[in-house]
Length: 308
Length: 308
Ligand SMILES: Nc1ncnc2c1ncn2[C@@H]1O[C@H](COP(=O)(O)OP(=O)(O)OP(=O)(O)O)[C@@H](O)[C@H]1O
Ligand SMILES: [Mg+2]
Image: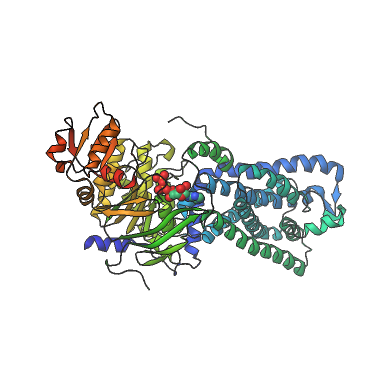
Protein backbone atom coordinates (compact mmCIF):
# COMPACT_ATOMS: atom_id res chain seq x y z
CA UNK A 1 0.00 0.00 0.00
CA UNK A 2 2.74 2.40 1.00
CA UNK A 3 4.66 1.20 -2.02
CA UNK A 4 1.76 2.07 -4.22
CA UNK A 5 1.59 5.47 -2.59
CA UNK A 6 5.21 6.30 -3.30
CA UNK A 7 4.80 5.27 -6.87
CA UNK A 8 1.83 7.55 -7.32
CA UNK A 9 3.86 10.40 -5.87
CA UNK A 10 6.76 9.81 -8.15
CA UNK A 11 4.76 9.53 -11.31
CA UNK A 12 5.41 12.44 -13.65
CA UNK A 13 2.54 14.83 -14.05
CA UNK A 14 1.29 14.93 -17.57
CA UNK A 15 -0.15 18.30 -18.29
CA UNK A 16 -1.99 17.76 -21.51
CA UNK A 17 -4.17 15.15 -23.11
CA UNK A 18 -2.17 12.83 -25.30
CA UNK A 19 -1.63 13.82 -28.87
CA UNK A 20 -1.44 17.47 -28.11
CA UNK A 21 1.72 19.40 -28.54
CA UNK A 22 3.35 19.95 -25.17
CA UNK A 23 5.90 22.60 -24.28
CA UNK A 24 7.27 20.33 -21.57
CA UNK A 25 8.14 17.69 -24.11
CA UNK A 26 9.96 20.23 -26.27
CA UNK A 27 11.82 21.51 -23.24
CA UNK A 28 12.80 17.95 -22.36
CA UNK A 29 14.51 17.64 -25.72
CA UNK A 30 16.17 21.03 -25.28
CA UNK A 31 17.32 20.07 -21.79
CA UNK A 32 18.91 16.99 -23.25
CA UNK A 33 20.86 19.07 -25.76
CA UNK A 34 21.86 21.43 -22.98
CA UNK A 35 23.45 18.57 -21.07
CA UNK A 36 25.27 17.48 -24.21
CA UNK A 37 26.39 21.03 -24.75
CA UNK A 38 27.92 21.03 -21.29
CA UNK A 39 30.36 18.56 -22.74
CA UNK A 40 30.99 20.23 -26.06
CA UNK A 41 30.82 23.97 -25.49
CA UNK A 42 34.55 24.52 -25.77
CA UNK A 43 34.79 23.15 -29.26
CA UNK A 44 31.56 24.82 -30.35
CA UNK A 45 32.76 28.15 -29.05
CA UNK A 46 36.15 27.69 -30.63
CA UNK A 47 34.57 27.13 -34.03
CA UNK A 48 32.16 30.00 -33.54
CA UNK A 49 34.99 32.43 -32.83
CA UNK A 50 37.72 31.19 -35.11
CA UNK A 51 35.68 30.87 -38.28
CA UNK A 52 34.39 34.44 -38.54
CA UNK A 53 37.76 35.75 -37.44
CA UNK A 54 39.48 33.92 -40.25
CA UNK A 55 36.91 35.07 -42.78
CA UNK A 56 37.21 38.65 -41.67
CA UNK A 57 40.99 38.50 -41.59
CA UNK A 58 41.41 36.95 -45.00
CA UNK A 59 38.52 38.48 -46.93
CA UNK A 60 38.34 41.69 -44.95
CA UNK A 61 41.96 42.58 -45.34
CA UNK A 62 42.67 40.68 -48.52
CA UNK A 63 39.65 41.87 -50.47
CA UNK A 64 38.94 44.98 -48.45
CA UNK A 65 42.26 46.43 -49.55
CA UNK A 66 41.18 46.03 -53.18
CA UNK A 67 37.54 46.93 -52.81
CA UNK A 68 37.42 49.73 -50.27
CA UNK A 69 33.69 50.39 -50.24
CA UNK A 70 30.82 48.29 -51.45
CA UNK A 71 27.16 49.25 -51.81
CA UNK A 72 27.87 52.27 -49.67
CA UNK A 73 29.59 50.34 -46.86
CA UNK A 74 33.24 49.82 -46.13
CA UNK A 75 33.95 46.27 -47.26
CA UNK A 76 34.82 45.10 -43.79
CA UNK A 77 31.46 46.40 -42.48
CA UNK A 78 29.63 44.79 -45.38
CA UNK A 79 31.39 41.52 -44.83
CA UNK A 80 31.22 41.62 -41.03
CA UNK A 81 27.44 41.78 -41.06
CA UNK A 82 27.22 39.15 -43.79
CA UNK A 83 29.35 36.80 -41.77
CA UNK A 84 26.91 37.00 -38.87
CA UNK A 85 24.22 35.51 -41.05
CA UNK A 86 26.54 32.95 -42.59
CA UNK A 87 27.71 31.74 -39.22
CA UNK A 88 24.10 31.40 -38.09
CA UNK A 89 23.53 29.18 -41.08
CA UNK A 90 26.65 27.12 -40.33
CA UNK A 91 25.74 26.85 -36.68
CA UNK A 92 22.22 25.66 -37.32
CA UNK A 93 21.78 23.98 -40.67
CA UNK A 94 25.01 22.03 -40.69
CA UNK A 95 24.46 20.23 -37.37
CA UNK A 96 20.78 19.88 -38.21
CA UNK A 97 21.65 17.88 -41.30
CA UNK A 98 24.59 15.91 -39.99
CA UNK A 99 23.84 15.32 -36.32
CA UNK A 100 20.17 14.64 -36.84
CA UNK A 101 20.96 12.10 -39.51
CA UNK A 102 23.52 10.35 -37.36
CA UNK A 103 21.32 10.34 -34.30
CA UNK A 104 18.51 8.83 -36.29
CA UNK A 105 20.44 6.38 -38.37
CA UNK A 106 23.42 5.26 -36.31
CA UNK A 107 23.12 6.21 -32.69
CA UNK A 108 19.49 5.08 -32.21
CA UNK A 109 19.02 8.26 -30.23
CA UNK A 110 15.57 8.97 -31.53
CA UNK A 111 14.48 5.41 -30.95
CA UNK A 112 15.27 6.05 -27.30
CA UNK A 113 13.63 9.46 -27.14
CA UNK A 114 10.47 8.36 -28.89
CA UNK A 115 10.01 5.60 -26.35
CA UNK A 116 9.52 8.34 -23.76
CA UNK A 117 6.45 10.57 -23.73
CA UNK A 118 7.80 12.69 -26.59
CA UNK A 119 6.20 12.82 -30.02
CA UNK A 120 7.95 13.34 -33.31
CA UNK A 121 6.83 16.94 -33.75
CA UNK A 122 7.96 17.80 -30.25
CA UNK A 123 11.28 16.12 -30.92
CA UNK A 124 11.80 18.05 -34.14
CA UNK A 125 10.76 21.32 -32.53
CA UNK A 126 13.04 20.75 -29.56
CA UNK A 127 16.05 19.95 -31.73
CA UNK A 128 15.45 23.01 -33.90
CA UNK A 129 14.75 25.24 -30.93
CA UNK A 130 18.02 24.27 -29.35
CA UNK A 131 19.97 25.04 -32.51
CA UNK A 132 18.11 28.33 -32.85
CA UNK A 133 18.97 29.34 -29.29
CA UNK A 134 22.56 28.45 -29.89
CA UNK A 135 22.58 30.44 -33.12
CA UNK A 136 21.05 33.40 -31.34
CA UNK A 137 23.94 33.46 -28.92
CA UNK A 138 26.74 32.51 -31.26
CA UNK A 139 25.46 34.83 -33.96
CA UNK A 140 26.73 37.65 -31.78
CA UNK A 141 30.26 36.34 -31.82
CA UNK A 142 31.12 37.40 -35.38
CA UNK A 143 29.51 40.73 -34.65
CA UNK A 144 31.89 41.20 -31.74
CA UNK A 145 34.77 40.09 -33.93
CA UNK A 146 33.70 42.59 -36.59
CA UNK A 147 33.59 45.31 -33.95
CA UNK A 148 37.14 44.34 -33.16
CA UNK A 149 37.87 44.86 -36.84
CA UNK A 150 36.38 48.33 -36.76
CA UNK A 151 32.60 47.91 -37.14
CA UNK A 152 30.99 50.73 -35.22
CA UNK A 153 28.78 49.49 -32.33
CA UNK A 154 25.22 50.74 -32.21
CA UNK A 155 21.93 50.07 -30.38
CA UNK A 156 20.45 48.32 -33.40
CA UNK A 157 22.92 45.52 -32.79
CA UNK A 158 20.86 44.45 -29.81
CA UNK A 159 18.34 43.03 -32.25
CA UNK A 160 20.89 40.78 -33.89
CA UNK A 161 20.48 37.87 -31.46
CA UNK A 162 16.75 37.79 -32.20
CA UNK A 163 17.29 37.81 -35.93
CA UNK A 164 19.93 35.13 -35.50
CA UNK A 165 17.48 33.08 -33.47
CA UNK A 166 14.78 33.39 -36.11
CA UNK A 167 17.11 32.57 -38.97
CA UNK A 168 18.68 29.77 -36.93
CA UNK A 169 15.27 28.24 -36.31
CA UNK A 170 14.48 28.38 -40.02
CA UNK A 171 17.76 26.78 -41.04
CA UNK A 172 17.62 24.16 -38.31
CA UNK A 173 14.18 23.00 -39.43
CA UNK A 174 15.33 23.08 -43.03
CA UNK A 175 18.34 20.95 -42.07
CA UNK A 176 16.27 18.49 -40.08
CA UNK A 177 13.93 18.06 -42.99
CA UNK A 178 16.87 17.35 -45.29
CA UNK A 179 18.35 14.91 -42.79
CA UNK A 180 15.10 13.01 -42.86
CA UNK A 181 14.96 13.04 -46.66
CA UNK A 182 18.41 11.64 -47.29
CA UNK A 183 19.03 7.98 -46.79
CA UNK A 184 22.80 7.76 -46.73
CA UNK A 185 25.82 9.71 -45.64
CA UNK A 186 26.90 9.89 -49.25
CA UNK A 187 23.93 12.02 -50.22
CA UNK A 188 25.20 14.70 -47.88
CA UNK A 189 27.64 15.63 -50.64
CA UNK A 190 24.70 16.65 -52.79
CA UNK A 191 23.25 18.63 -49.94
CA UNK A 192 26.38 20.56 -49.18
CA UNK A 193 27.52 21.24 -52.71
CA UNK A 194 24.16 21.56 -54.35
CA UNK A 195 22.23 23.36 -51.64
CA UNK A 196 24.39 24.72 -48.91
CA UNK A 197 26.99 26.43 -51.09
CA UNK A 198 24.57 28.29 -53.38
CA UNK A 199 22.47 29.27 -50.39
CA UNK A 200 25.32 30.95 -48.68
CA UNK A 201 26.91 32.42 -51.80
CA UNK A 202 23.76 33.87 -53.31
CA UNK A 203 22.56 35.83 -50.33
CA UNK A 204 24.45 39.08 -50.47
CA UNK A 205 26.90 37.96 -47.85
CA UNK A 206 30.23 38.47 -49.59
CA UNK A 207 29.04 40.73 -52.39
CA UNK A 208 25.77 42.45 -53.21
CA UNK A 209 23.26 40.54 -55.31
CA UNK A 210 22.79 43.47 -57.66
CA UNK A 211 25.56 42.36 -60.00
CA UNK A 212 24.11 38.88 -60.49
CA UNK A 213 21.75 37.92 -63.35
CA UNK A 214 18.11 38.74 -62.77
CA UNK A 215 16.98 35.17 -62.38
CA UNK A 216 19.57 34.59 -59.69
CA UNK A 217 18.36 37.66 -57.90
CA UNK A 218 14.80 36.39 -58.05
CA UNK A 219 15.90 33.04 -56.74
CA UNK A 220 17.61 34.71 -53.82
CA UNK A 221 14.25 36.06 -52.69
CA UNK A 222 13.34 32.62 -51.39
CA UNK A 223 16.70 32.19 -49.72
CA UNK A 224 16.15 32.74 -46.00
CA UNK A 225 19.78 33.69 -45.65
CA UNK A 226 19.23 36.68 -47.92
CA UNK A 227 16.45 37.94 -45.66
CA UNK A 228 18.56 37.35 -42.57
CA UNK A 229 21.44 39.30 -44.10
CA UNK A 230 19.18 42.18 -45.08
CA UNK A 231 17.66 42.31 -41.61
CA UNK A 232 21.01 42.21 -39.86
CA UNK A 233 22.49 44.94 -42.07
CA UNK A 234 19.33 46.92 -41.62
CA UNK A 235 19.42 46.93 -37.84
CA UNK A 236 23.18 47.36 -37.58
CA UNK A 237 23.46 50.27 -39.98
CA UNK A 238 19.93 51.60 -39.62
CA UNK A 239 17.93 52.81 -42.56
CA UNK A 240 15.66 49.80 -42.95
CA UNK A 241 12.04 50.81 -43.51
CA UNK A 242 9.72 49.05 -41.02
CA UNK A 243 7.63 47.64 -43.85
CA UNK A 244 10.66 46.13 -45.52
CA UNK A 245 11.83 44.75 -42.20
CA UNK A 246 8.44 43.18 -41.58
CA UNK A 247 8.55 41.72 -45.05
CA UNK A 248 11.84 39.98 -44.31
CA UNK A 249 10.56 38.72 -40.99
CA UNK A 250 7.40 37.48 -42.67
CA UNK A 251 9.38 35.49 -45.20
CA UNK A 252 11.46 33.93 -42.44
CA UNK A 253 8.33 33.06 -40.49
CA UNK A 254 6.65 31.56 -43.51
CA UNK A 255 9.76 29.52 -44.17
CA UNK A 256 9.73 28.32 -40.56
CA UNK A 257 6.11 27.23 -40.74
CA UNK A 258 6.64 25.40 -44.00
CA UNK A 259 9.78 23.67 -42.77
CA UNK A 260 8.21 22.79 -39.45
CA UNK A 261 5.51 20.84 -41.25
CA UNK A 262 7.90 19.26 -43.72
CA UNK A 263 10.46 18.30 -41.08
CA UNK A 264 7.84 16.83 -38.77
CA UNK A 265 6.17 14.94 -41.58
CA UNK A 266 9.32 13.54 -43.09
CA UNK A 267 10.90 12.66 -39.76
CA UNK A 268 7.76 10.82 -38.77
CA UNK A 269 7.94 8.81 -41.96
CA UNK A 270 11.47 7.80 -41.06
CA UNK A 271 11.13 6.98 -37.38
CA UNK A 272 7.62 5.58 -37.22
CA UNK A 273 7.35 2.47 -39.27
CA UNK A 274 4.08 2.36 -41.08
CA UNK A 275 5.49 -0.33 -43.35
CA UNK A 276 8.18 -0.67 -45.94
CA UNK A 277 11.15 0.56 -43.96
CA UNK A 278 14.38 -1.38 -44.03
CA UNK A 279 15.10 -3.42 -40.91
CA UNK A 280 17.26 -1.80 -38.26
CA UNK A 281 20.98 -1.91 -38.95
CA UNK A 282 22.75 -4.96 -37.57
CA UNK A 283 24.38 -4.82 -34.14
CA UNK A 284 27.70 -3.97 -35.74
CA UNK A 285 26.42 -0.41 -35.52
CA UNK A 286 28.77 0.01 -32.60
CA UNK A 287 31.60 0.24 -35.10
CA UNK A 288 29.75 2.78 -37.19
CA UNK A 289 28.96 4.79 -34.13
CA UNK A 290 32.60 4.98 -33.19
CA UNK A 291 33.57 6.03 -36.64
CA UNK A 292 30.91 8.65 -36.93
CA UNK A 293 30.36 10.02 -33.55
CA UNK A 294 33.70 11.69 -32.97
CA UNK A 295 34.29 13.09 -36.42
CA UNK A 296 31.02 14.39 -37.71
CA UNK A 297 28.31 14.49 -35.09
CA UNK A 298 30.43 15.17 -32.13
CA UNK A 299 33.42 16.90 -33.66
CA UNK A 300 33.53 18.72 -30.41
CA UNK A 301 34.20 15.63 -28.43
CA UNK A 302 36.60 13.89 -30.71
CA UNK A 303 38.61 11.45 -28.71
CA UNK A 304 40.65 8.60 -30.05
CA UNK A 305 38.70 5.37 -29.85
CA UNK A 306 39.71 3.42 -26.84
CA UNK A 307 40.12 -0.25 -26.70
CA UNK A 308 37.87 -1.89 -24.23
CA UNK B 1 -11.88 7.25 -21.02
CA UNK B 2 -9.42 8.24 -18.34
CA UNK B 3 -6.39 6.33 -17.15
CA UNK B 4 -6.86 3.21 -15.11
CA UNK B 5 -7.46 3.61 -11.44
CA UNK B 6 -7.97 -0.03 -10.70
CA UNK B 7 -5.54 -2.82 -11.21
CA UNK B 8 -8.26 -4.71 -13.04
CA UNK B 9 -7.31 -2.93 -16.25
CA UNK B 10 -4.85 -5.17 -18.05
CA UNK B 11 -1.35 -3.80 -18.47
CA UNK B 12 -1.38 -5.00 -22.04
CA UNK B 13 -4.19 -6.02 -24.30
CA UNK B 14 -3.64 -6.94 -27.94
CA UNK B 15 -6.38 -8.19 -30.23
CA UNK B 16 -5.82 -9.45 -33.74
CA UNK B 17 -2.79 -7.26 -34.28
CA UNK B 18 -1.30 -7.46 -37.75
CA UNK B 19 1.85 -5.80 -39.02
CA UNK B 20 3.03 -6.18 -42.57
CA UNK B 21 6.24 -5.09 -44.23
CA UNK B 22 5.49 -5.23 -47.91
CA UNK B 23 4.65 -8.82 -48.66
CA UNK B 24 5.99 -10.05 -45.35
CA UNK B 25 3.58 -10.39 -42.45
CA UNK B 26 5.75 -9.93 -39.38
CA UNK B 27 2.92 -10.02 -36.86
CA UNK B 28 -0.05 -12.06 -37.91
CA UNK B 29 -3.15 -11.74 -35.78
CA UNK B 30 -1.52 -11.47 -32.39
CA UNK B 31 -3.65 -11.75 -29.26
CA UNK B 32 -2.04 -11.09 -25.93
CA UNK B 33 -3.33 -10.24 -22.47
CA UNK B 34 -1.01 -9.31 -19.65
CA UNK B 35 -2.56 -8.53 -16.28
CA UNK B 36 -0.85 -5.95 -14.11
CA UNK B 37 2.03 -7.16 -11.96
CA UNK B 38 2.96 -10.09 -14.16
CA UNK B 39 6.42 -10.74 -15.58
CA UNK B 40 5.80 -12.19 -19.01
CA UNK B 41 8.62 -13.71 -21.00
CA UNK B 42 8.19 -13.46 -24.74
CA UNK B 43 9.99 -16.33 -26.38
CA UNK B 44 10.31 -17.01 -30.04
CA UNK B 45 12.77 -17.87 -32.77
CA UNK B 46 14.48 -15.20 -34.85
CA UNK B 47 12.01 -13.28 -36.92
CA UNK B 48 9.01 -14.37 -34.86
CA UNK B 49 7.93 -10.75 -34.53
CA UNK B 50 8.97 -10.00 -30.94
CA UNK B 51 10.74 -6.73 -31.65
CA UNK B 52 8.05 -5.64 -34.06
CA UNK B 53 5.48 -6.22 -31.34
CA UNK B 54 7.50 -4.18 -28.85
CA UNK B 55 7.78 -1.35 -31.36
CA UNK B 56 4.05 -1.30 -31.86
CA UNK B 57 3.57 -0.92 -28.12
CA UNK B 58 5.49 2.36 -28.15
CA UNK B 59 3.79 3.42 -31.40
CA UNK B 60 7.12 3.52 -33.18
CA UNK B 61 5.57 1.05 -35.52
CA UNK B 62 1.92 1.29 -36.46
CA UNK B 63 -0.19 -1.82 -36.64
CA UNK B 64 -2.02 -2.43 -39.90
CA UNK B 65 -4.90 -4.11 -38.14
CA UNK B 66 -6.10 -4.91 -34.67
CA UNK B 67 -6.45 -3.26 -31.32
CA UNK B 68 -3.78 -2.41 -28.78
CA UNK B 69 -4.42 -1.07 -25.28
CA UNK B 70 -1.79 -0.32 -22.70
CA UNK B 71 -3.00 0.29 -19.14
CA UNK B 72 -6.29 1.22 -20.73
CA UNK B 73 -4.80 3.67 -23.22
CA UNK B 74 -5.54 3.11 -26.84
CA UNK B 75 -2.49 2.82 -29.07
CA UNK B 76 -1.46 4.75 -31.12
CA UNK B 77 -3.98 7.51 -30.33
CA UNK B 78 -3.10 7.76 -26.64
CA UNK B 79 0.39 6.42 -26.91
CA UNK B 80 2.02 9.40 -25.29
CA UNK B 81 0.09 8.78 -22.13
CA UNK B 82 0.96 5.15 -22.22
CA UNK B 83 4.62 5.97 -22.74
CA UNK B 84 4.57 8.22 -19.69
CA UNK B 85 3.60 5.19 -17.65
CA UNK B 86 5.97 2.71 -19.17
CA UNK B 87 9.69 2.27 -19.48
CA UNK B 88 11.39 0.82 -22.53
CA UNK B 89 14.73 -0.93 -22.59
CA UNK B 90 15.76 -0.95 -26.23
CA UNK B 91 17.43 -3.80 -28.01
CA UNK B 92 20.21 -1.49 -29.19
CA UNK B 93 22.26 0.28 -26.58
CA UNK B 94 21.74 3.99 -27.22
CA UNK B 95 23.44 5.49 -24.21
CA UNK B 96 25.41 8.67 -24.79
CA UNK B 97 28.94 7.41 -24.49
CA UNK B 98 30.55 10.78 -24.07
CA UNK B 99 28.41 11.63 -21.08
CA UNK B 100 28.65 10.37 -17.55
CA UNK B 101 26.32 7.91 -15.91
CA UNK B 102 24.64 10.68 -14.00
CA UNK B 103 24.24 12.88 -17.08
CA UNK B 104 22.68 10.05 -19.05
CA UNK B 105 20.13 9.54 -16.32
CA UNK B 106 19.48 13.26 -15.90
CA UNK B 107 18.81 13.55 -19.60
CA UNK B 108 16.09 10.93 -19.43
CA UNK B 109 14.67 12.37 -16.23
CA UNK B 110 13.85 15.39 -18.39
CA UNK B 111 12.43 13.32 -21.20
CA UNK B 112 10.28 11.36 -18.77
CA UNK B 113 9.25 14.66 -17.12
CA UNK B 114 10.24 13.58 -13.66
CA UNK B 115 9.19 16.59 -11.59
CA UNK B 116 12.12 18.80 -10.75
CA UNK B 117 12.03 18.16 -7.00
CA UNK B 118 12.15 14.41 -7.51
CA UNK B 119 14.86 14.33 -10.13
CA UNK B 120 17.85 13.98 -7.89
CA UNK B 121 16.22 11.27 -5.84
CA UNK B 122 15.09 9.39 -8.93
CA UNK B 123 18.60 9.45 -10.36
CA UNK B 124 20.11 8.30 -7.09
CA UNK B 125 17.64 5.47 -6.83
CA UNK B 126 18.37 4.38 -10.38
CA UNK B 127 22.10 4.38 -9.77
CA UNK B 128 21.70 2.31 -6.64
CA UNK B 129 19.47 -0.16 -8.42
CA UNK B 130 22.07 -0.51 -11.15
CA UNK B 131 24.80 -0.88 -8.53
CA UNK B 132 26.44 2.17 -10.01
CA UNK B 133 26.02 4.28 -6.88
CA UNK B 134 29.63 5.39 -6.86
CA UNK B 135 29.96 5.65 -10.63
CA UNK B 136 27.92 8.77 -11.22
CA UNK B 137 30.83 10.66 -12.73
CA UNK B 138 32.16 7.83 -14.85
CA UNK B 139 31.82 8.23 -18.60
CA UNK B 140 29.61 5.59 -20.13
CA UNK B 141 32.47 4.86 -22.50
CA UNK B 142 34.49 3.65 -19.54
CA UNK B 143 31.85 1.28 -18.18
CA UNK B 144 32.00 -2.46 -18.64
CA UNK B 145 29.42 -4.12 -20.85
CA UNK B 146 27.42 -5.30 -17.87
CA UNK B 147 27.40 -1.88 -16.24
CA UNK B 148 26.22 -0.29 -19.46
CA UNK B 149 23.37 -2.72 -19.70
CA UNK B 150 22.34 -2.12 -16.12
CA UNK B 151 22.40 1.59 -16.79
CA UNK B 152 20.31 1.12 -19.91
CA UNK B 153 17.73 -0.73 -17.84
CA UNK B 154 17.49 1.66 -14.92
CA UNK B 155 17.32 4.57 -17.34
CA UNK B 156 13.91 3.24 -18.26
CA UNK B 157 12.85 3.12 -14.61
CA UNK B 158 13.51 6.74 -13.65
CA UNK B 159 9.85 7.68 -13.68
CA UNK B 160 8.73 4.57 -11.84
CA UNK B 161 6.86 3.06 -14.73
CA UNK B 162 4.03 0.64 -14.15
CA UNK B 163 4.98 -1.36 -17.21
CA UNK B 164 8.46 -2.12 -18.47
CA UNK B 165 9.25 -3.43 -21.93
CA UNK B 166 12.58 -5.12 -22.43
CA UNK B 167 13.67 -6.39 -25.80
CA UNK B 168 16.39 -8.93 -25.22
CA UNK B 169 17.88 -7.11 -22.27
CA UNK B 170 20.58 -9.68 -21.70
CA UNK B 171 21.62 -10.63 -25.21
CA UNK B 172 25.36 -10.92 -25.63
CA UNK B 173 26.13 -10.66 -21.93
CA UNK B 174 28.18 -13.20 -20.08
CA UNK B 175 26.29 -15.41 -17.61
CA UNK B 176 27.53 -13.59 -14.51
CA UNK B 177 26.32 -10.23 -15.80
CA UNK B 178 23.03 -11.76 -16.84
CA UNK B 179 22.47 -12.96 -13.32
CA UNK B 180 23.12 -9.44 -12.01
CA UNK B 181 20.36 -8.20 -14.24
CA UNK B 182 18.02 -10.82 -13.00
CA UNK B 183 18.28 -9.09 -9.64
CA UNK B 184 16.92 -5.91 -11.20
CA UNK B 185 14.04 -7.74 -12.80
CA UNK B 186 13.19 -9.48 -9.56
CA UNK B 187 13.20 -6.12 -7.80
CA UNK B 188 10.67 -4.86 -10.33
CA UNK B 189 8.51 -7.87 -9.76
CA UNK B 190 8.62 -7.26 -6.02
CA UNK B 191 7.34 -3.72 -6.64
CA UNK B 192 4.42 -5.01 -8.65
CA UNK B 193 5.67 -3.65 -11.95
CA UNK B 194 4.46 -5.43 -15.06
CA UNK B 195 7.31 -6.61 -17.26
CA UNK B 196 7.24 -7.78 -20.85
CA UNK B 197 10.60 -9.23 -21.69
CA UNK B 198 11.68 -10.88 -24.87
CA UNK B 199 14.65 -13.15 -24.66
CA UNK B 200 16.53 -15.79 -26.54
CA UNK B 201 17.64 -17.45 -23.35
CA UNK B 202 15.01 -19.97 -22.51
CA UNK B 203 16.48 -20.74 -19.14
CA UNK B 204 16.26 -17.07 -18.32
CA UNK B 205 12.61 -16.89 -19.30
CA UNK B 206 11.93 -19.99 -17.23
CA UNK B 207 13.53 -18.48 -14.16
CA UNK B 208 12.31 -14.93 -14.33
CA UNK B 209 8.87 -15.12 -15.84
CA UNK B 210 5.61 -15.71 -14.09
CA UNK B 211 4.33 -16.72 -17.47
CA UNK B 212 5.81 -17.20 -20.90
CA UNK B 213 4.26 -16.63 -24.27
CA UNK B 214 5.75 -18.56 -27.15
CA UNK B 215 5.70 -16.66 -30.38
CA UNK B 216 6.16 -18.12 -33.81
CA UNK B 217 5.47 -16.58 -37.20
CA UNK B 218 3.84 -13.52 -35.72
CA UNK B 219 1.42 -15.21 -33.32
CA UNK B 220 1.37 -16.45 -29.78
CA UNK B 221 1.26 -20.20 -30.18
CA UNK B 222 1.19 -21.09 -26.49
CA UNK B 223 1.03 -19.31 -23.20
CA UNK B 224 1.24 -20.29 -19.57
CA UNK B 225 3.46 -20.65 -16.56
CA UNK B 226 6.74 -22.40 -17.38
CA UNK B 227 5.80 -25.30 -15.11
CA UNK B 228 2.40 -25.78 -16.75
CA UNK B 229 3.84 -25.65 -20.24
CA UNK B 230 6.56 -28.12 -19.39
CA UNK B 231 4.06 -30.46 -17.81
CA UNK B 232 1.70 -30.13 -20.76
CA UNK B 233 4.18 -30.69 -23.55
CA UNK B 234 7.20 -32.43 -22.09
CA UNK B 235 5.93 -34.27 -19.03
CA UNK B 236 8.22 -34.84 -16.11
CA UNK B 237 11.31 -36.33 -17.66
CA UNK B 238 13.17 -36.43 -20.92
CA UNK B 239 15.34 -39.32 -21.95
CA UNK B 240 18.14 -39.03 -24.43
CA UNK B 241 18.89 -42.08 -26.53
CA UNK B 242 22.03 -42.68 -28.50
CA UNK B 243 21.21 -44.45 -31.78
CA UNK B 244 22.56 -47.93 -32.43
CA UNK B 245 23.66 -49.23 -35.81
CA UNK B 246 20.19 -48.72 -37.31
CA UNK B 247 20.88 -45.01 -37.27
CA UNK B 248 19.18 -41.99 -35.85
CA UNK B 249 16.32 -41.88 -38.36
CA UNK B 250 15.22 -45.39 -37.56
CA UNK B 251 15.46 -44.74 -33.85
CA UNK B 252 13.37 -41.62 -34.12
CA UNK B 253 10.80 -43.35 -36.31
CA UNK B 254 10.52 -46.18 -33.85
CA UNK B 255 9.85 -43.95 -30.88
CA UNK B 256 7.50 -41.67 -32.76
CA UNK B 257 5.65 -44.72 -33.93
CA UNK B 258 4.59 -45.20 -30.35
CA UNK B 259 3.11 -41.74 -30.26
CA UNK B 260 5.91 -39.95 -28.47
CA UNK B 261 7.32 -36.56 -29.28
CA UNK B 262 11.02 -36.53 -29.93
CA UNK B 263 13.60 -34.01 -30.86
CA UNK B 264 17.14 -34.25 -32.03
CA UNK B 265 19.73 -33.20 -29.54
CA UNK B 266 22.97 -33.35 -31.47
CA UNK B 267 23.65 -37.00 -32.25
CA UNK B 268 21.02 -38.23 -29.81
CA UNK B 269 17.26 -38.39 -29.82
CA UNK B 270 15.44 -36.86 -26.86
CA UNK B 271 12.08 -38.29 -25.93
CA UNK B 272 9.64 -36.01 -24.17
CA UNK B 273 7.28 -37.31 -21.51
CA UNK B 274 9.61 -40.26 -21.20
CA UNK B 275 8.11 -41.38 -17.93
CA UNK B 276 5.27 -42.81 -20.00
CA UNK B 277 7.47 -44.95 -22.26
CA UNK B 278 6.12 -48.53 -22.15
CA UNK B 279 8.52 -51.20 -20.91
CA UNK B 280 8.10 -53.09 -24.16
CA UNK B 281 9.60 -50.17 -26.06
CA UNK B 282 12.19 -49.39 -23.44
CA UNK B 283 13.50 -52.97 -23.73
CA UNK B 284 14.39 -52.34 -27.36
CA UNK B 285 16.38 -49.22 -26.55
CA UNK B 286 19.77 -48.64 -24.99
CA UNK B 287 20.11 -47.10 -21.55
CA UNK B 288 19.20 -43.45 -21.83
CA UNK B 289 20.41 -40.33 -20.20
CA UNK B 290 17.60 -39.07 -18.00
CA UNK B 291 16.88 -35.48 -16.99
CA UNK B 292 13.97 -33.29 -15.94
CA UNK B 293 11.94 -31.77 -18.76
CA UNK B 294 12.44 -28.07 -19.28
CA UNK B 295 11.06 -25.17 -21.22
CA UNK B 296 13.57 -25.64 -23.98
CA UNK B 297 11.91 -28.96 -24.81
CA UNK B 298 8.60 -27.15 -25.10
CA UNK B 299 10.06 -24.34 -27.16
CA UNK B 300 11.67 -26.66 -29.65
CA UNK B 301 8.59 -28.81 -29.91
CA UNK B 302 6.26 -25.91 -30.51
CA UNK B 303 8.36 -23.79 -32.79
CA UNK B 304 10.24 -26.51 -34.62
CA UNK B 305 13.37 -24.47 -34.07
CA UNK B 306 16.58 -25.67 -32.61
CA UNK B 307 18.36 -23.63 -30.00
CA UNK B 308 22.04 -22.93 -29.92
N1 LIG C 1 11.33 -2.27 -40.65
C1 LIG C 1 11.19 -3.47 -41.23
N2 LIG C 1 11.05 -3.58 -42.57
C2 LIG C 1 10.92 -4.78 -43.15
N3 LIG C 1 10.86 -5.93 -42.48
C3 LIG C 1 10.98 -5.90 -41.16
C4 LIG C 1 11.17 -4.67 -40.45
N4 LIG C 1 11.26 -4.95 -39.14
C5 LIG C 1 11.15 -6.26 -39.02
N5 LIG C 1 10.99 -6.85 -40.22
C6 LIG C 1 10.81 -8.29 -40.46
O1 LIG C 1 9.76 -8.73 -39.64
C7 LIG C 1 10.04 -10.02 -39.13
C8 LIG C 1 9.95 -10.00 -37.65
O2 LIG C 1 11.04 -9.27 -37.15
P1 LIG C 1 11.30 -8.99 -35.62
O3 LIG C 1 12.48 -8.12 -35.53
O4 LIG C 1 10.05 -8.53 -35.00
O5 LIG C 1 11.64 -10.43 -35.08
P2 LIG C 1 12.16 -10.87 -33.66
O6 LIG C 1 11.20 -11.86 -33.15
O7 LIG C 1 12.43 -9.69 -32.84
O8 LIG C 1 13.51 -11.58 -34.05
P3 LIG C 1 14.90 -11.61 -33.29
O9 LIG C 1 14.79 -12.70 -32.30
O10 LIG C 1 15.85 -11.95 -34.38
O11 LIG C 1 15.14 -10.28 -32.71
C9 LIG C 1 11.41 -10.40 -39.68
O12 LIG C 1 11.21 -11.21 -40.80
C10 LIG C 1 12.02 -9.09 -40.05
O13 LIG C 1 12.92 -9.24 -41.11
MG1 LIG D 1 14.18 -8.78 -31.97
